[in-house]
Image 1 (cartoon, rainbow, N blue to C red):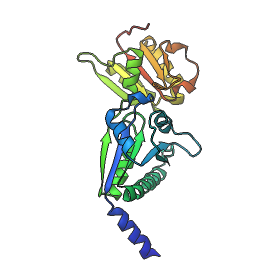
Image 2: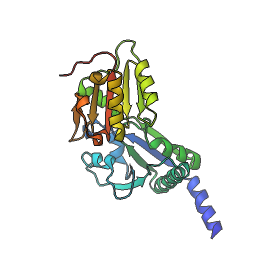
Image 3: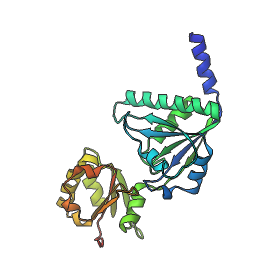
Image 4: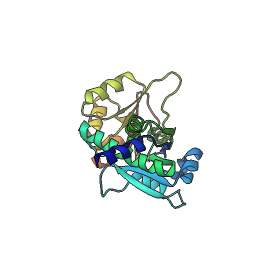
Length: 253
């Protein structure tokens, strides 16, 4: 039994084919690139990420509005945890599923909202694929990031001339956010989540609250652009939200 198992592993590791990592943008299916649409139309199987079983995949909901050809969708669960052992096991298990499909079909796609190399699970999946299945090639197709889409939707430019831009997630240490706000002309805060209240408190302290815009679920049917950030009370708006803060006054119409 062990011999058979080892043989199967070796056969899988020698499999050849191609994985396409595709950024599908922040929410509006019309923001897919031509290359992304071309690949998604050509592959038989599309892998989509989600945080837990029983939860709808945001990426798949976007694809359902634009991909009309019949596809096999395989949802990969990547747990929201900081336990490195659990994360490594989930990435390895996902890589094995992807490799098994590619061994049969020669190629497959993995989609992610935004861009594949900006705070994306695809980065870790790709690392696991390259380590475990080196014969499988990869092509990464960029997507429009949520903060670029939010900038355009709100009419707030990110940078001009020699201005400096910082993009960072909101973590537990608000001192990092405060330091960044003092050093950069424009700061984009991602992964705001339930820390929205703390962010608003900090912006008031630094007299930047009137220079801030929050864009929730940009590109989705329920998109919201909130320019009166000081009025926000509901931390739930932090989910899938982007905040843009500029040291220079911004026009809010």
